[in-house]
Image (tube, rainbow, N blue to C red):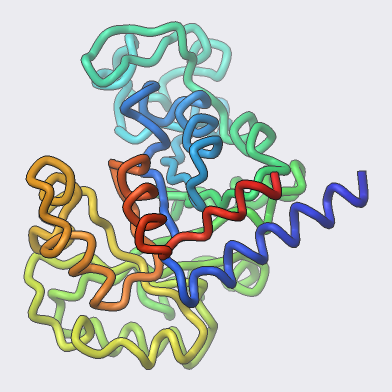
Amino acid sequence: MKAKLILVLLLLQTINLAAQNKVMVAAHRGDWRNAPENSLRAFEYAAAMGVDIVELDLNKTKDSVLIILHDQTLDRTTDGKGKPSDYTLAEIQKFRLRNGLGRVTRNPIPTFKEVMLALKGKPVLVNLDKSYPYYREAYAVLKETGTLKQALFKAEVTYPELKGKYPKLIDSIVFMPIVNLDKANARAIIVEYLKNIKPWAFEFNFRSDTSSILKDNRFITAAGSKIWFNSLWASLNAGHDDDLAVEENNKKDSWDWLISHGATVLQTDRPKELLAYLRSRRLHDGDRLKKR
Protein backbone atom coordinates (compact mmCIF):
# COMPACT_ATOMS: atom_id res chain seq x y z
CA MET A 1 0.00 0.00 0.00
CA LYS A 2 2.86 2.35 0.90
CA ALA A 3 4.62 1.57 -2.38
CA LYS A 4 1.44 2.40 -4.33
CA LEU A 5 1.12 5.74 -2.51
CA ILE A 6 4.71 6.63 -3.36
CA LEU A 7 4.09 5.74 -7.01
CA VAL A 8 1.02 7.98 -7.12
CA LEU A 9 2.92 10.88 -5.58
CA LEU A 10 5.70 10.44 -8.13
CA LEU A 11 3.17 10.40 -10.97
CA LEU A 12 1.55 13.59 -9.66
CA GLN A 13 4.99 15.18 -9.45
CA THR A 14 5.58 14.13 -13.07
CA ILE A 15 2.36 15.90 -14.06
CA ASN A 16 3.55 19.11 -12.41
CA LEU A 17 7.02 19.00 -13.94
CA ALA A 18 5.69 18.17 -17.39
CA ALA A 19 3.86 21.46 -17.54
CA GLN A 20 7.12 23.40 -17.77
CA ASN A 21 7.67 22.25 -21.36
CA LYS A 22 4.37 20.54 -22.16
CA VAL A 23 0.73 21.60 -22.08
CA MET A 24 -1.55 20.10 -19.45
CA VAL A 25 -5.18 19.35 -20.29
CA ALA A 26 -8.02 20.10 -17.87
CA ALA A 27 -11.41 18.56 -18.64
CA HIS A 28 -14.16 21.08 -17.85
CA ARG A 29 -16.80 19.31 -15.73
CA GLY A 30 -15.24 16.02 -16.77
CA ASP A 31 -15.98 14.25 -20.05
CA TRP A 32 -19.47 15.75 -20.20
CA ARG A 33 -19.98 14.87 -23.88
CA ASN A 34 -20.09 11.18 -22.97
CA ALA A 35 -21.60 11.39 -19.47
CA PRO A 36 -23.61 13.98 -17.53
CA GLU A 37 -21.57 17.01 -16.52
CA ASN A 38 -20.10 16.83 -13.01
CA SER A 39 -21.03 13.15 -12.71
CA LEU A 40 -18.70 10.59 -11.22
CA ARG A 41 -18.74 8.79 -14.56
CA ALA A 42 -17.69 11.99 -16.41
CA PHE A 43 -14.65 12.35 -14.15
CA GLU A 44 -13.69 8.69 -14.47
CA TYR A 45 -14.01 8.84 -18.26
CA ALA A 46 -11.81 11.95 -18.39
CA ALA A 47 -9.17 10.38 -16.16
CA ALA A 48 -9.14 7.23 -18.28
CA MET A 49 -8.79 9.40 -21.38
CA GLY A 50 -5.49 10.71 -20.03
CA VAL A 51 -6.28 14.29 -19.00
CA ASP A 52 -4.06 15.83 -16.36
CA ILE A 53 -6.83 17.63 -14.49
CA VAL A 54 -10.58 17.34 -14.04
CA GLU A 55 -12.60 20.42 -13.12
CA LEU A 56 -15.62 20.21 -10.86
CA ASP A 57 -17.97 22.57 -9.02
CA LEU A 58 -18.67 22.43 -5.31
CA ASN A 59 -22.04 23.01 -3.69
CA LYS A 60 -23.54 22.11 -0.32
CA THR A 61 -26.63 20.34 0.96
CA LYS A 62 -28.96 21.39 3.74
CA ASP A 63 -27.06 19.15 6.15
CA SER A 64 -23.69 20.62 5.08
CA VAL A 65 -22.40 17.83 2.85
CA LEU A 66 -20.31 18.93 -0.13
CA ILE A 67 -21.71 17.75 -3.44
CA ILE A 68 -20.78 18.35 -7.07
CA LEU A 69 -23.15 20.71 -8.85
CA HIS A 70 -22.44 23.78 -10.98
CA ASP A 71 -25.66 25.78 -10.74
CA GLN A 72 -27.26 27.29 -7.68
CA THR A 73 -30.38 25.29 -8.46
CA LEU A 74 -31.00 21.69 -9.44
CA ASP A 75 -33.29 22.57 -12.34
CA ARG A 76 -30.97 22.52 -15.37
CA THR A 77 -28.77 19.52 -14.68
CA THR A 78 -31.05 17.20 -12.66
CA ASP A 79 -34.65 16.07 -12.38
CA GLY A 80 -34.92 18.02 -9.13
CA LYS A 81 -36.09 21.57 -8.48
CA GLY A 82 -34.85 24.35 -6.25
CA LYS A 83 -31.61 24.94 -4.36
CA PRO A 84 -29.43 22.05 -3.20
CA SER A 85 -29.32 23.75 0.20
CA ASP A 86 -33.05 23.04 0.50
CA TYR A 87 -32.38 19.28 0.60
CA THR A 88 -30.51 16.88 2.84
CA LEU A 89 -27.99 14.52 1.31
CA ALA A 90 -30.47 11.66 1.60
CA GLU A 91 -32.96 13.70 -0.42
CA ILE A 92 -30.34 14.85 -2.94
CA GLN A 93 -29.36 11.24 -3.60
CA LYS A 94 -32.85 10.53 -4.95
CA PHE A 95 -32.34 12.93 -7.87
CA ARG A 96 -30.71 11.95 -11.15
CA LEU A 97 -28.49 13.94 -13.48
CA ARG A 98 -29.50 15.01 -16.98
CA ASN A 99 -27.22 14.47 -19.97
CA GLY A 100 -26.25 17.08 -22.55
CA LEU A 101 -29.59 16.64 -24.33
CA GLY A 102 -31.50 17.28 -21.13
CA ARG A 103 -32.60 13.67 -20.72
CA VAL A 104 -32.63 12.19 -17.24
CA THR A 105 -30.02 9.46 -16.75
CA ARG A 106 -29.36 6.92 -14.01
CA ASN A 107 -26.41 8.95 -12.70
CA PRO A 108 -26.81 10.37 -9.19
CA ILE A 109 -25.35 13.65 -7.94
CA PRO A 110 -21.98 12.67 -6.45
CA THR A 111 -20.57 13.92 -3.19
CA PHE A 112 -17.15 15.53 -3.15
CA LYS A 113 -15.88 12.68 -0.98
CA GLU A 114 -17.08 10.08 -3.49
CA VAL A 115 -15.26 11.83 -6.33
CA MET A 116 -11.99 12.16 -4.44
CA LEU A 117 -12.08 8.51 -3.38
CA ALA A 118 -12.80 7.46 -6.98
CA LEU A 119 -9.85 9.48 -8.29
CA LYS A 120 -7.49 8.66 -5.45
CA GLY A 121 -4.51 6.76 -6.77
CA LYS A 122 -4.93 8.09 -10.30
CA PRO A 123 -2.40 10.53 -11.80
CA VAL A 124 -4.94 13.31 -12.20
CA LEU A 125 -5.41 16.58 -10.34
CA VAL A 126 -8.81 17.97 -9.33
CA ASN A 127 -9.63 21.63 -9.94
CA LEU A 128 -12.11 22.89 -7.33
CA ASP A 129 -14.25 25.54 -8.99
CA LYS A 130 -16.91 27.50 -7.08
CA SER A 131 -15.16 26.34 -3.94
CA TYR A 132 -14.23 29.64 -2.24
CA PRO A 133 -17.10 29.54 0.30
CA TYR A 134 -16.27 25.94 1.21
CA TYR A 135 -12.48 25.82 1.61
CA ARG A 136 -12.59 24.56 5.20
CA GLU A 137 -15.12 21.84 4.43
CA ALA A 138 -13.22 20.81 1.28
CA TYR A 139 -9.93 20.72 3.19
CA ALA A 140 -11.50 18.40 5.78
CA VAL A 141 -12.69 15.99 3.06
CA LEU A 142 -9.29 16.00 1.37
CA LYS A 143 -7.50 15.28 4.63
CA GLU A 144 -9.97 12.50 5.44
CA THR A 145 -9.51 10.86 2.04
CA GLY A 146 -5.76 11.44 1.82
CA THR A 147 -6.08 13.40 -1.41
CA LEU A 148 -4.95 16.89 -0.39
CA LYS A 149 -2.06 16.88 -2.89
CA GLN A 150 -4.46 16.15 -5.75
CA ALA A 151 -6.65 19.23 -5.25
CA LEU A 152 -6.28 22.72 -6.73
CA PHE A 153 -8.07 25.46 -4.81
CA LYS A 154 -8.96 28.56 -6.81
CA ALA A 155 -10.75 31.90 -6.52
CA GLU A 156 -10.99 35.29 -8.20
CA VAL A 157 -9.79 37.27 -5.19
CA THR A 158 -6.74 39.35 -4.31
CA TYR A 159 -4.08 38.06 -1.96
CA PRO A 160 -5.25 40.26 0.96
CA GLU A 161 -8.80 38.93 0.48
CA LEU A 162 -7.56 35.34 0.49
CA LYS A 163 -5.39 35.90 3.56
CA GLY A 164 -8.20 37.67 5.35
CA LYS A 165 -10.69 34.85 4.81
CA TYR A 166 -8.43 31.81 5.13
CA PRO A 167 -5.25 32.87 6.98
CA LYS A 168 -4.54 29.39 8.38
CA LEU A 169 -5.18 27.47 5.17
CA ILE A 170 -2.97 29.39 2.74
CA ASP A 171 0.17 27.41 3.52
CA SER A 172 -1.65 24.06 3.52
CA ILE A 173 -3.35 24.07 0.13
CA VAL A 174 -2.36 24.21 -3.52
CA PHE A 175 -3.80 27.51 -4.75
CA MET A 176 -4.47 29.15 -8.11
CA PRO A 177 -5.72 32.76 -8.39
CA ILE A 178 -8.18 33.61 -11.16
CA VAL A 179 -7.32 36.94 -12.77
CA ASN A 180 -9.36 38.91 -15.30
CA LEU A 181 -6.76 40.42 -17.65
CA ASP A 182 -9.24 43.05 -18.84
CA LYS A 183 -9.03 44.78 -15.46
CA ALA A 184 -6.56 47.61 -14.96
CA ASN A 185 -5.17 46.10 -11.74
CA ALA A 186 -4.49 42.63 -13.18
CA ARG A 187 -0.71 42.97 -13.12
CA ALA A 188 -0.74 44.33 -9.57
CA ILE A 189 -2.79 41.34 -8.41
CA ILE A 190 -0.33 38.92 -10.01
CA VAL A 191 2.75 40.65 -8.60
CA GLU A 192 1.28 40.72 -5.10
CA TYR A 193 0.61 36.99 -5.20
CA LEU A 194 4.11 36.26 -6.44
CA LYS A 195 5.57 38.31 -3.57
CA ASN A 196 3.63 36.48 -0.88
CA ILE A 197 3.06 32.91 -2.04
CA LYS A 198 3.98 30.73 -4.99
CA PRO A 199 0.67 30.00 -6.75
CA TRP A 200 0.53 26.68 -8.56
CA ALA A 201 -0.77 28.61 -11.57
CA PHE A 202 -2.62 31.75 -12.59
CA GLU A 203 -5.91 31.25 -14.39
CA PHE A 204 -6.40 34.07 -16.89
CA ASN A 205 -9.69 35.12 -18.45
CA PHE A 206 -10.00 37.87 -21.05
CA ARG A 207 -12.55 39.18 -23.55
CA SER A 208 -9.89 41.29 -25.27
CA ASP A 209 -6.49 39.88 -26.21
CA THR A 210 -4.60 43.15 -25.91
CA SER A 211 -3.31 42.77 -22.34
CA SER A 212 0.44 43.31 -21.93
CA ILE A 213 0.48 40.19 -19.75
CA LEU A 214 -0.41 38.10 -22.78
CA LYS A 215 2.56 39.56 -24.61
CA ASP A 216 5.04 38.94 -21.81
CA ASN A 217 4.25 36.57 -18.97
CA ARG A 218 7.65 34.99 -18.60
CA PHE A 219 8.02 36.61 -15.18
CA ILE A 220 5.25 34.26 -14.02
CA THR A 221 6.73 31.03 -15.30
CA ALA A 222 10.20 32.16 -14.17
CA ALA A 223 8.78 32.34 -10.65
CA GLY A 224 7.63 28.72 -10.96
CA SER A 225 3.91 29.27 -11.56
CA LYS A 226 2.02 27.91 -14.55
CA ILE A 227 -0.25 29.81 -16.93
CA TRP A 228 -3.79 28.50 -17.27
CA PHE A 229 -6.06 29.56 -20.12
CA ASN A 230 -9.65 28.48 -20.70
CA SER A 231 -10.23 27.45 -24.29
CA LEU A 232 -13.88 26.49 -23.77
CA TRP A 233 -15.94 29.66 -24.28
CA ALA A 234 -15.03 32.55 -26.58
CA SER A 235 -15.90 35.05 -23.83
CA LEU A 236 -13.06 33.66 -21.69
CA ASN A 237 -10.33 33.86 -24.35
CA ALA A 238 -11.22 36.62 -26.84
CA GLY A 239 -12.45 34.07 -29.37
CA HIS A 240 -9.46 31.71 -29.35
CA ASP A 241 -11.72 28.83 -28.37
CA ASP A 242 -12.39 25.10 -28.71
CA ASP A 243 -15.13 25.44 -31.30
CA LEU A 244 -12.85 27.40 -33.60
CA ALA A 245 -10.26 24.63 -33.26
CA VAL A 246 -12.62 21.69 -33.74
CA GLU A 247 -15.63 22.85 -35.75
CA GLU A 248 -13.69 25.10 -38.11
CA ASN A 249 -10.39 23.20 -37.86
CA ASN A 250 -8.61 26.47 -37.19
CA LYS A 251 -5.91 25.53 -34.71
CA LYS A 252 -3.76 28.53 -35.62
CA ASP A 253 -6.14 31.08 -34.13
CA SER A 254 -7.33 28.93 -31.25
CA TRP A 255 -5.17 26.40 -29.41
CA ASP A 256 -1.96 27.41 -31.15
CA TRP A 257 -2.61 31.06 -30.30
CA LEU A 258 -3.10 30.24 -26.61
CA ILE A 259 0.00 28.05 -26.54
CA SER A 260 2.09 30.73 -28.25
CA HIS A 261 0.96 33.17 -25.56
CA GLY A 262 2.33 31.07 -22.76
CA ALA A 263 -0.28 28.42 -21.95
CA THR A 264 1.00 25.55 -19.85
CA VAL A 265 -2.55 24.46 -18.95
CA LEU A 266 -5.63 24.53 -21.18
CA GLN A 267 -9.07 23.90 -19.72
CA THR A 268 -11.26 22.54 -22.47
CA ASP A 269 -14.69 21.22 -23.40
CA ARG A 270 -12.96 19.08 -26.07
CA PRO A 271 -10.49 17.00 -24.06
CA LYS A 272 -10.28 14.10 -26.51
CA GLU A 273 -9.52 16.33 -29.49
CA LEU A 274 -7.13 18.57 -27.58
CA LEU A 275 -5.16 15.61 -26.23
CA ALA A 276 -4.82 14.15 -29.72
CA TYR A 277 -3.67 17.47 -31.13
CA LEU A 278 -1.13 18.14 -28.40
CA ARG A 279 0.29 14.64 -28.70
CA SER A 280 0.60 15.05 -32.46
CA ARG A 281 2.81 18.06 -31.73
CA ARG A 282 4.59 16.30 -28.86
CA LEU A 283 3.26 18.88 -26.45
CA HIS A 284 1.63 16.42 -24.05
CA ASP A 285 3.20 13.70 -21.98
CA GLY A 286 1.25 10.74 -23.33
CA ASP A 287 3.91 8.34 -22.03
CA ARG A 288 2.53 8.97 -18.56
CA LEU A 289 -0.39 6.69 -19.45
CA LYS A 290 1.94 3.71 -19.73
CA LYS A 291 2.84 4.09 -16.04
CA ARG A 292 -0.70 3.59 -14.79
